[in-house]
Image: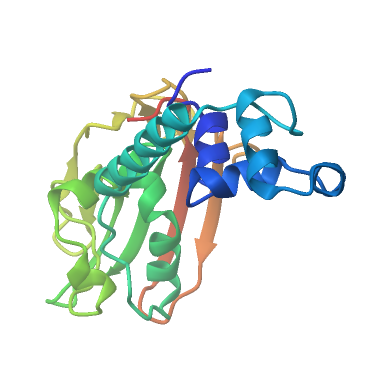
Length: 232
């Protein structure tokens, strides 16, 4: 069995010391016959008694060291969440907080459609690649309520209804498709699946769900969650 396998980690991490591990393998029947706790431990270590896997002292502590290093490595590699330790009540921000880790790790990509007014009170709308914005911006200001999340000309799409400025861009996660009978489409660069944003569509694409979010902060918000098969 490999030292960093899940099974090995599970076994050794249950016990603080090798003696505790040996004691876990000693049955009441063993103690009633032997009447010596230390002898019972020795027989387990030698493989003569016990109800589980035989692990030598050196192997036990080697596995424990490997397991602790693996856990430490996972904690270090875990992405820092901008939403952590924040009291979030606004519906869109709650949705984004719930999916922040999945978008940072690549298990999911999310497209956010927002329709609202900018600081000049001009009506704007657009589609945002959430995972891309997470990597390119500090989202703590959004989760803390210091700044409002709005589409920008650099997002997947952007439209200013007053001056009719229209922008569209591909991002690291999505390719924009405009010349299609189903209207605006997005193609995932991870699994090459198509995301359909037409609200009248019977399906929004493989592994994609659509969720309309009601919020007093925005005119309209729709979130498309796309589960990806490839992890980063």
